[in-house]
Length: 289
Image 1 (tube, rainbow, N blue to C red):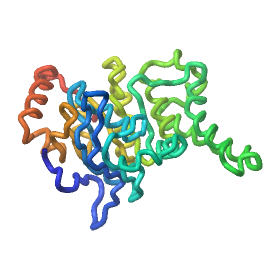
Image 2 (image 1 turned 120 degrees about the horizontal axis):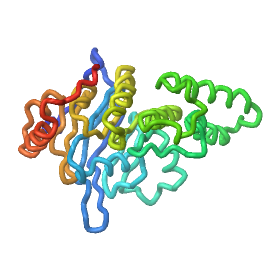
Image 3 (image 1 turned 135 degrees about the vertical axis):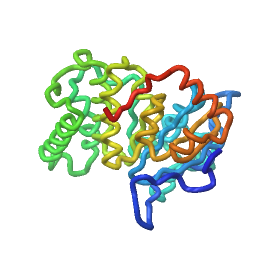
Image 4 (image 1 turned 90 degrees about the vertical axis):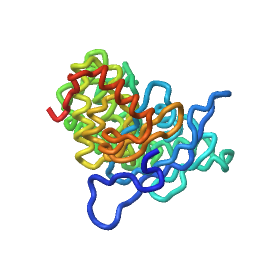
């Protein structure tokens, strides 16, 4: 495993100090007798992107789900901005309400969009914010101002992803790439500390993949803290500050993209890259274009 004992690559910041956004310590998870995560540890600096690579079934999605509290780790700790979010040794003290609060730190973009079919693109973006706002003690008194701000910021997000003109379209009226861009805007609307992507292009036709990856790339350029599970190897090389490679639930490689992808230390990573290269041939896409 490369670089596990030291800090991750810090590609976008210069100077003497970096803020550690996320610390993941010794996360493990079982489903029945199957151990799907084994002692995973890494950190994410504020404003950086970490790409998680690996073959199907290697535990990538389960890792994201544990960080987003859609699954609870059997062991390990999760620390955000120095605050302990989860400690498996105190598992019983976490109520469902407290878990929901912790989940708000992470925006999650799913493989299959998961938009509400009965709502327009705009409604999908603002719905969660509207529901959350009702819990505010000043909601009744300041309802109009609160809702106006949510709607204004929702439109700004649709403009950011290039879909303002389709704000009143329902999901079935949008392409797969457009639906995924709406899902990204919906996640951003909640203003999470970290944005998590679980294979965001796997459900898309090849010609629609580029438009989604360009949105993610623009977020990286704005120093959005992101965890990205992806099979788009060239994209991971271009966008990620750090690469984490998993196999059979374990962390095999961890370090700068040029180190992990050009000079892997493990035979498993070498085989993975060789298989990718043989499948792609000379047709690797450059998402700078």
